[in-house]
Length: 83
Length: 390
Image (cartoon, rainbow over all chains, first blue to last red):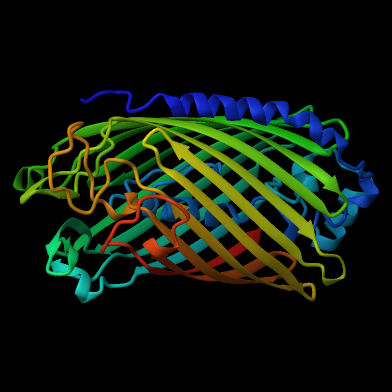
């Protein structure tokens, strides 16, 4: 096997991004208070954050097989995708 | 678990003020169901003016997916997923110089193989926290993957914010076909370890946003055993670093559009890895209900990536670090997907369909060194699904 570390700087960038992500969260407390009886629109199916589970898994597999980037969708799966 | 109509369900949720964010946002609800999905994937043939030799017909895949969600009791939910797919076609092999630019060499014989996958997960909800653990196995004639995952989720006390966290591990084995005939590695392994953190926040009565970060580390044999590279009149096997660390930041936004009852969907993902690939993905959709039974949703997806340093269609000298690849999927390129979906819902069941056309081209990349990459792919995809509530 060849050298394990191609570059180490992205680790630092990723760490900084995690720090930015967590430190930016208190800003979200400024969001509006939405009472339970005001949440009907948010509960509509067209507002769902995650779409159909099987379609999301297939999308992630297809795009991940044809593009260099993958991940971020939360779906797990297998397969070579070599072709 | 009883199945309520969408209207009754949303009224119940909003009037009772159920604290669970998943219920509130109508996502990942523990609704018992059986689902079947068929997908046909069809890559367009390689244009003959980009072909050196080989079969220009590219991959076709037929996939059958099955999913069962069953509540064992108030707290536990079992989920089973099965997949079977049949693949056939020829595959880009390497690139060689042509009279007016690089030409793609395709594999000569049609490849035919099948893949099967099974997933099983258990979720437990208690005191506003959901824990979900799953295992899965995927097998095809030259590749096996065994993987496990965990996700946790916790709602805030007012139900307006959800934290989720998770991790997964995959252990993969590669045994390329005709290894000795083509000088491929005979057996290799790779593994992948991933972690993620996300926060979902209700912004107001019509908008919600989710931010997610993930970090994935892959190690082992990360080259493609079926790809080769032309290096100054010699053809060598694809050679990539044996470790890759990938970072993503994903933001997803949903906006309810008032009287039209439509939802505007906007998703963005930033990707960066230590192979120096940077990628951006932007998706936008308009989900429009028509009456109480129909919904149509046109959507568009834009993707752009830059190439790693070890990618080139052709190499005219041996790279000193001994990493090289001319796999078109590592090239600088952009892609646009045009999609249209429709769904018909009844009280206990639904039918849905989606058609997609994916077009890739190096000229629409946002950044990165442009290359003349002959193997870039365009494809069609059609998927049909039937869902039955239990």
